[in-house]
Length: 149
Image (cartoon, rainbow, N blue to C red; front, side, top):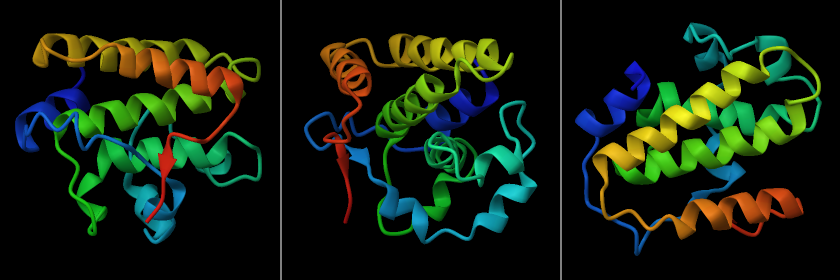
């Protein structure tokens, strides 16, 4: 389990909130100062890619905020499971756009698997249909799971 995954399981509350679980839409992240990302040290973080105008940059930005700075989401305090599911969603969405562009795709896949393993290990009653729904919506290219304020 990566350090970021351990952080979420050990530091954020575990309310088991599957009934209130939803994907945070882009507006939750738009208010965060992008300069905060300059302090991130992450193999997946590339400042040019994160803020370029390619289609995949916004999902990577959201994933990085959820992974490294969830405390900056002031209006909403997602619990550990909600953060993991949201991290999975945004990284998976980014990987769909990015997989053909770079050799770092293997790193993306490792992170995706790590998030799944963390959920499996720490939330034995997790409803895996959630992951299947996420995968389905991403394959379809729709944003219906994302909820903005």
